[in-house]
Length: 313
Image (cartoon, rainbow, N blue to C red; front, side, top):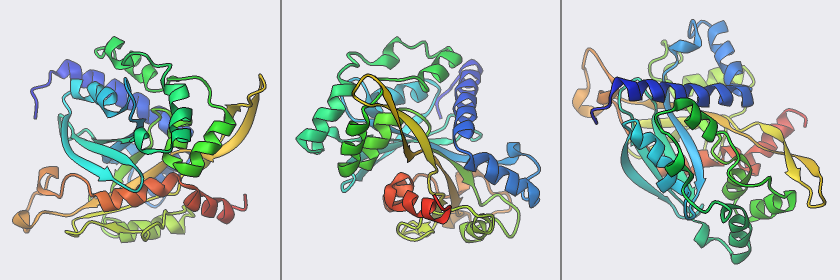
């Protein structure tokens, strides 16, 4: 771990608190899941939840993408780790280890815009080309409130609905980012530290479905890494009403995919089996591309249409 000052960690607290506050306001599944957990006695308060990781989506274009966004978290002591390639979805990603165990891991992905069709590239660049320098370079990273504000502000003009729909035909990831920008894509509840009866993904999925939450079933409701030590699931993103430019000087509303909630179970590594006191450092770390590939689809129409159907929308 880097030697990060307590002052920087306090600033990181401000940034993460702002991200989570706005995320919970925008994703009703979050407070609903927490209420269900408290009602069933799994936790006494939301403060008991361990956040395994949070995730961001970005556009891989000049002045933006991973190279820009990661500067924020590297400043607070996060360390870049493994790279992942999602060839079908045309994405790159890295994960970042936190400066202290109480902080979540961070997962940042970016769309390889140059791999898309000329039409999709032209649409995306008509927005992102208005960003002519890296916005993080002019940001005071020691002002947590300024960073929080930046992560929730527009990076480009309001998208045309026709552009959003055209992008969605080729890349639902691209369509999500063109509207949502740096909004938190998801946070992740750590499952293995919960009480007996809820401490596995299988058990927790049963709890979620009993309470009416819709799970992403792409690749199965339970995603398991080849080593069997990282087990994940996620809700299907809720649809939200978004406001678009109608191309005629006005606006138009359209329902689009918002954000979702993920769940992670990390098993103890073989060399620590039987250890009396198990910490984060004794469990499977990092991520798994095949798991993440399917979890990305929590915001895709193949999943959200099932949720809408189940809710009678």
